[in-house]
Length: 150
Image (cartoon, rainbow, N blue to C red; front, top):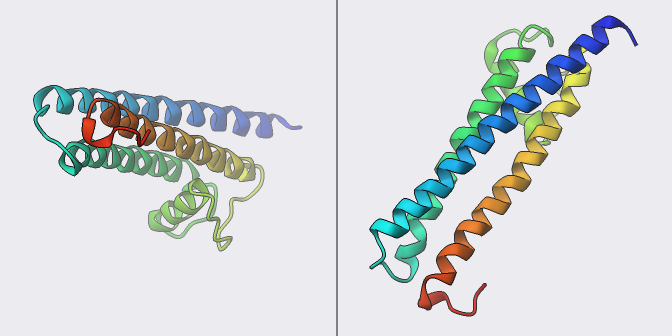
């Protein structure tokens, strides 16, 4: 393994850490927004009690994932011989979501970044699922309209 490969791996692990820190911050915001909503709108019942926190959580997840894909795009823009930033963004988005269209790829030694982007996306997808269920369960436990659902 050359020094170049080690350097690429270190950059990749650093970007993974940065992305997961960003996502952790957004998860904190989701929990704070849910707390705010439940504290200030306790009178809402039924579907109205779920819509606000769920939409806020979804919006924050979209913002977090978009920021992460843009950050990966900025990193890989020069490494993949992309014609423009939109192509790098498309590549990062398809790799991050593990769709992987396969039309573009990074050149060696930067190809090691591709599974790192996908791994970050998979981790974030799991965290997103967990936080959305946590929001729903928390609301359902405090709302008699949803007794027995969770």
